[in-house]
Image (cartoon, rainbow, N blue to C red):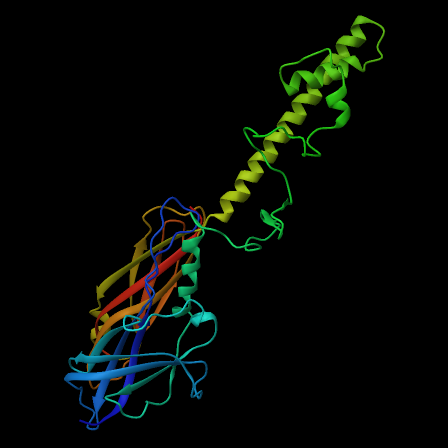
Length: 341
């Protein structure tokens, strides 16, 4: 059996990750690949074949960066499916640069041209997020403007303010916590609460000589301390909001859609599906969608395009479009949404 055509139907990676959320899921380090094979007469092939796959840095490079062979791949009406990465695992740094996929059938010469992997496959880099929660984070992996970093001696430098309910230790090496003169002032007096200390300090420093002026100073001191407390509360709330923005929620899903409109007629035709998120996002997230599988009529042009629109906090719309004489009986779509919840 001689094969002279190879059409890639789709390359799909399903990624399920959660960054800084309550639950985390393992990322499958593999790629679902579907292809369509015809013989010299243009007829779909049926049978079992050996298919070899190679990944290269360019479309003409002779040095393979990764390869694996799938034996006895079942081909029905020209269509076959394999899971890349099951015979030989991908390395973590493989997807750092552009990659091109080369394919050969039953040991024959590799087909040309090679297929470039698109950005969907590069979503494997999101696997690094699995190691953020409950694992060690390498130095300098978080920008100093966001939180802090440790130098080679283990010292931590922090840009901004830190709020805490308690402190463990004698604090002898801490600096800049409170003014030194505030620690030394009025050693014979003890006050329960920073608010009262601030008020009494203002009274002790008052130069008023009559009762009314002293009362006026007291009223002013209370007002000043109240403003300082409100300012502190606002700073804490702002800090909490900034930390909340660091937590990215990711929701994924898929669906199969029978497409009668795309299965009849000629020219441009579309069908749409409204998708709802399980939980609303704080603001409209970023959404990516790709073709997971499809059923096309043999002997006709194969044209199919999937796009996302009308993204809101609670859902979005997926539109499937075809044109020419293409007939599409069913389309499977996978999607991923990234945002804040």
